[in-house]
Length: 155
Image (cartoon, rainbow, N blue to C red; front, side, top):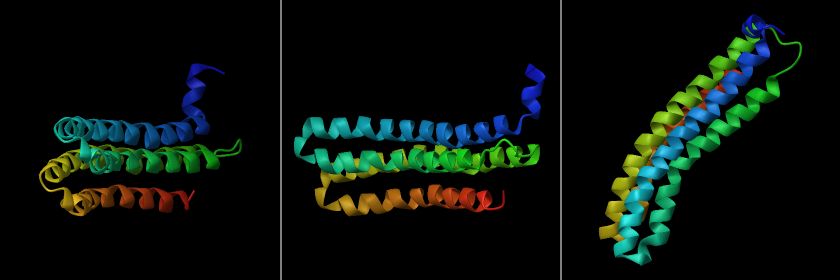
């Protein structure tokens, strides 16, 4: 196969869509969890009893990587030897909402969770409130997951 033939191979585009869905969302999850983890470590250094509430909060931005994995898995399940270039390009586009929205929502969720970690440091009983704030950002990742799934239904 020549290098130029890769541009006409629908499977290449489909794999790119799967990669975008997972890798870009996972980059956001890594950044969001990292931001929150730094704050959590600072809180736990001062108050070790806050480990579990801060760990719960720190884990929340990881869900975008899970959603990206789901979409990547579903895209890979659609790949076949008989698919057309249009189908391959469609699968590429389907990975974009989850990847891009997953990236941004995970980073911003990490920032919201960091504020929640600071809240829990001062008021441990406010864990549920901090989770609610983080869930508001999570909704955008869920919406992008649903949009990508709906788009998959048309390919």
